[in-house]
Image (cartoon, rainbow, N blue to C red; front, side):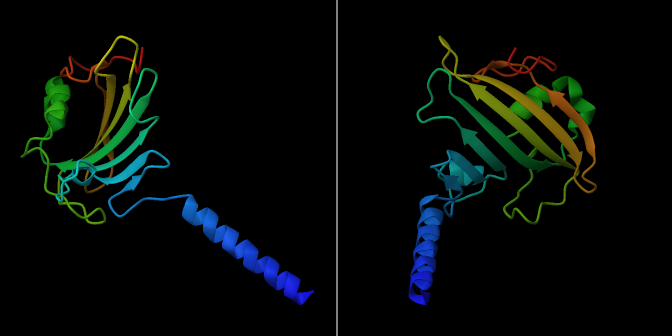
Length: 174
């Protein structure tokens, strides 16, 4: 009887180990292809060794993207650029935020840079019939980097992904 119990426990342990390892997970760069997710530095996602100063979490519905598919992107970056004093141009500034000096150097997820602001951007892309590239919606939240206080949250317009934003305030996927 003890041998059966011991054998059963061994089989259960091996099955658990098999399920856990077969379930996948994130690789050393940040990909989980089985779950169609990426969690890491945008530079690594793009195939560079450098972080490019943006932490991202991506989730997509299918590879390659087709009509009806979607992708969400959550970016985090730090800046001393005073977006709050330039709300009229917030959309354009975020669209062009990849260009320094707006983005501060950052390469350690657990140690953010000393900055005035932390920005978090949620981008949703959706592939629609007759449209290529996809349509995109951005929502940007601006935080005080030292206190984590939300200073403002802004909807950018809904537009084709290759066009710059036209302004603030359109509804999400109208």
